[in-house]
Image (cartoon, rainbow, N blue to C red; front, side, top):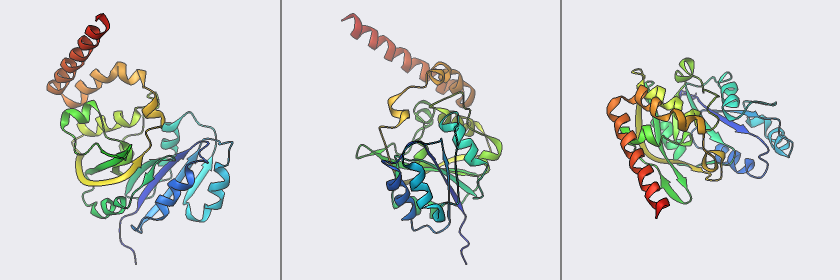
Amino acid sequence: MNTLPLISIILVTYNAEKCLQRCLNSIFQQTYPSLELIIIDGASTDGTLDILNAHSDAITYWRSEKDGGIYEAMNKALDQVKGQWVYFIGADDELTPDFSKLAGALSSPKAIYYGSVWKEGKKYLGKLSDYHHAKTGINHQAMIYPASVFQKYRFDTKYRISADHVLNMWCWKDPAYTFEFQDYVIATFSHMGVSSLQKDQLFDQNKARLIRENYGVTIWLRFLFKRLKANLRGSSFAEA
């Protein structure tokens, strides 16, 4: 009888027929035995639904309907979670065998576990300092959350691209949780996704305030100083 904690994998799709099968295969090939797969599709018009139908016996829950974007779809998926742990993956990403290794290392229900991802063939990002956690954030493809996080928080959908970074900022401040790094590369991250190709302008406008609120004055001042240096350096290049 399997007594390992259940991990809910959340996959959000939209017109993903070109990459979805590879992503699904990487999930189905995991050796960790206690997984459920929840898929929310944004009313795809290509062959995505055919692929989902073909694998309906291996998918715990899926539905397809129009939504307001990635994070609204993720929030919908969270309503279906039955696992003690939650993981998010994009249709153009793939799990590695290390995902099962990290899954087997989950122990503290107060820890948000994270590893690394492969990005353009290189290991990214590794263990982050407090400052880089605030400034850069952790790829959500590198993280496994205790499900209790989502009993307290949901993604703020006004941040169209960086709502996962904002969520992690809230969790950083929350004394109920710690961030625990494990040196596994658990996914291959697609650098062609929306988060790599576009900027979240609202997040950029609010970033300094969010850092001050969630990380304190010291990290906030360091962020402001480095941003000022970068802006001045950019101005010098422009003048030259």
